Image (cartoon, rainbow, N blue to C red; front, side, top):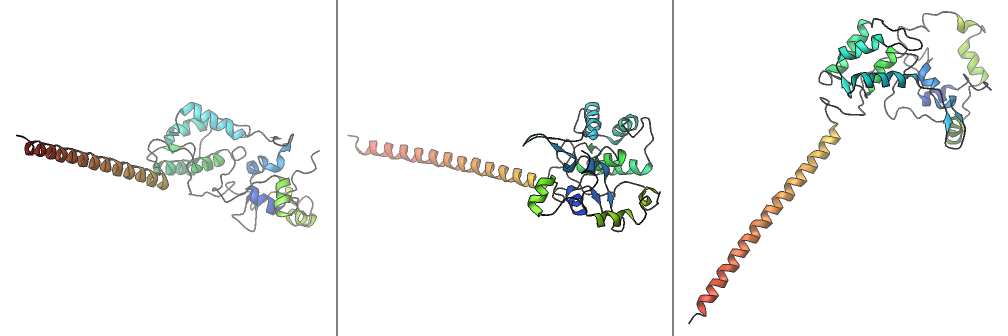
Length: 255
């Protein structure tokens, strides 16, 4: 046991969403994305696998219970997060000015509130809890697969070669343990301003496709109502004409 960990290839880590390549000369593994990745799951049956517990879910559940809504003002979130510890982050901390600015920027784009189930807030949580909350990639940019599916679909081994491992580790076997300013960035992953909403809430604009759909429904409803009114008027006119003809016929045959 324990012989397969920490040996995945770059191509496998890329599709898993666990590789940060914002600096091509210094690619880095995003720790929570790797820990929660399919390569760290152990299949127990054909349809069930045992994976690492997602500590970020505990954090988000605490936020949801405290807010009791799908969105919240920035100051409410700050008060909760600063007092909420994790296994690696202490409680009663102070968030940086950059973190506060980013949270306020999210709220500015959503009528003054922060959607709890959007990509930007998930990204903010990754920066607030970099070892617990995974970095949220845009939908469709990653294609996570377990090792068996990867081998079946690509024909490539999911493990890195000895040459690739040596190239990343360097010539000295303990070189990777030495501190380096290049490998210790200010943040664990870059910040992206791309948003994706999973649960639209109060004060949050609906997606364009949703508005188009509703517009089509309203237009169709209006057309049906107009057609019904036209039929009603036509039927009334026909009834009046029939009654007039009957009256004239009765007068003609009257003796």
